[in-house]
Amino acid sequence: MCLTYRSFAATAAVIVMSLVPCVAAAQNLKPVQLPAPRTEGGKPLMDVLKSRQSARVFSPDALPQQVLSNLLWAAFGVNRPDGRRTAPSARNWQEIDIYVVLPEGAYLYDAKSHALKPVVAGDHRAVTGTQAYVATAPVNLVYVADYARTGQAPPEERELFPPADAGCVAENAYLFCASEGLAVVVRGLIDRTALAKVLNLRADQKIILAQTIGFPKK
Image (spheres, rainbow, N blue to C red):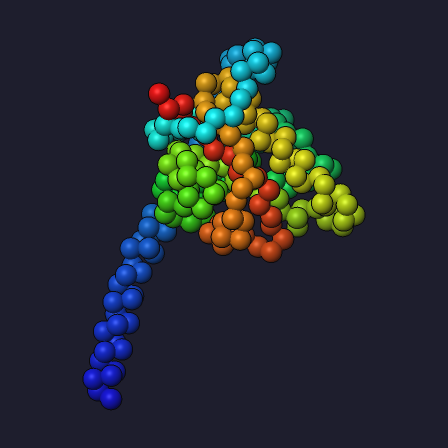
């Protein structure tokens, strides 16, 4: 019994010690206050529409924090004093959340404070899609509909409106990338069960789309 107990204790100690780095990594993922978005400048709208396109080859170089700030504000930031946003949403539900998956961890974009809230530490980019390039591209945005914000809306509205709203957010990101010369592609091929587990989503949160963004690979 003594040997068995000691073997069990030793095994348990190894398991606990192996978890310490994970706990430490989670603690080290701190909130990120993004710099104020720069809302001036950019290319003329018609030029942006002419150059808008999808790309599937990305440089691994990280986006500067100012560029990430501008991107998230353009996609679904607050653009009016009443808290309304750069993309429309049905009944002003504002039910689309942007999860920002970076090499160091996954964050939730808080538009009101224009900050990134930690969700999970570690490199989870590969889980954001089935394509190989998602694992090395610097930024993957995941658009999640929070159906708790849709209230008592009829089932048809709950089914149709959130995907349409997510599409508006994704198009804003497309246009920003076209203006800034960034590579971008929106994606629907996702193992949603696996990604929802990584992001700790509730049952009433649904992954709609993902979008990969980075510098073009030269």
